[in-house]
Image (tube, rainbow, N blue to C red; front, side, top):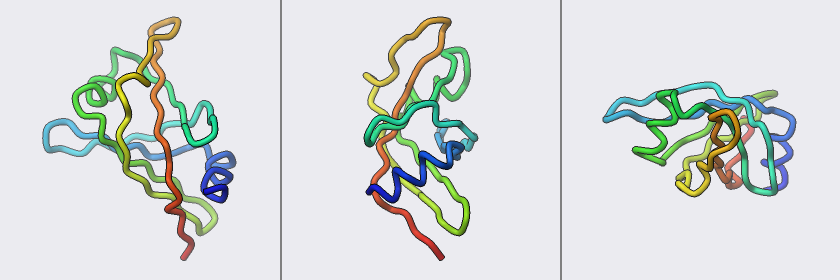
Amino acid sequence: MERVLSFLRDHKEIALATSEGNMPKLRIFQIMKQEEHVLYFATSSKKAVYRELRQNPNVEILAYADNMGLHRNDVIPASCMASRRNSKYRSSVKPKPHASSP
């Protein structure tokens, strides 16, 4: 697990997959903060990704660099989408050790 978390500390950009209906949506997010096994990113409540996460909290993340990758699917608990100043919200994904190198 430490190898995965170390990788994510050094590689802040992740691809975050959500869905709308039966259509997948993929976006690049930057990890804003990492606390132990929780990753935080920010978005606005006015964006489609926020609405998609509220309707379906199942997500996948993907990070890749230097012949090492991380792929993980998880659920973002609604309690993690807490209001902050200036309409920004925070969400978290807890990665599990699924790092691989070719």
